[in-house]
Length: 273
Image (tube, rainbow, N blue to C red; front, top):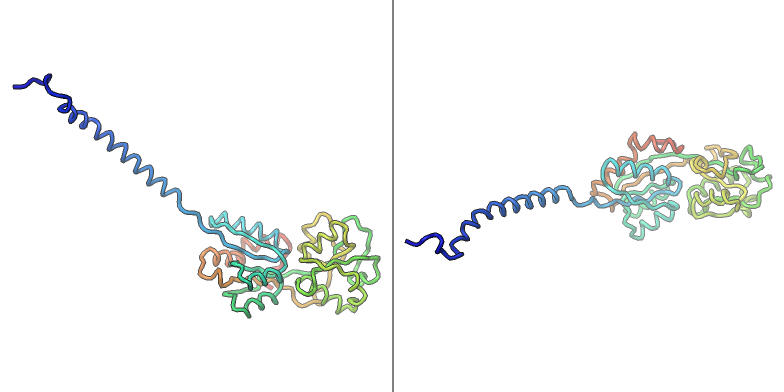
């Protein structure tokens, strides 16, 4: 009979294995559980959606997109410009999901190109005349533009910018467009027209009431009666690119929600014209 002391080291290894294997198993199980938990908490981020919106809606849409992201976890990327510029970009392949236009005309334009999945008239607005905050100009009514000492009157480009087109309609109806045309400084969008007044580059501008409301460097001098222009409506459009995208469709619906409506009203927009 051979004594335990005479056994070679290999005969001792099974004893070590019996000690180590349970430890290894526990460690492996712990690592596996940890990996599973990590995978569960690191779900892939939801892809963002892209919203094109008229420059005049900038402040409201920025607040609404933060609201939507907070509730849904979906990031919203935005691009602001004249409705005409945005519509042309969409026509030429920009992969926007939702479009908020300051003019029914540009929603109609995209619909004619077969790029609209759904649309709804969302907002209304009105035109006002603004002057620098420290301006001594007295403009009690729009007709006063024709006789006031104004060298430059800023408007969105009447050929393409909705606010500029509405402004020209009003001035034509008042019979003073011909006297003012030489003084008109065309802007790329309504916010640029406002900026011309804020920086002193123009003595007056015709902008939306919502733009005047957010400015600290310009003040409203006079309102332009609604009957002088066609109705100022903002259609929201779900574009074909966003059709079938659950997040894009949800944002499109959210624009018409009571929660978003409170934000639009806060910035002076009318609802559901």
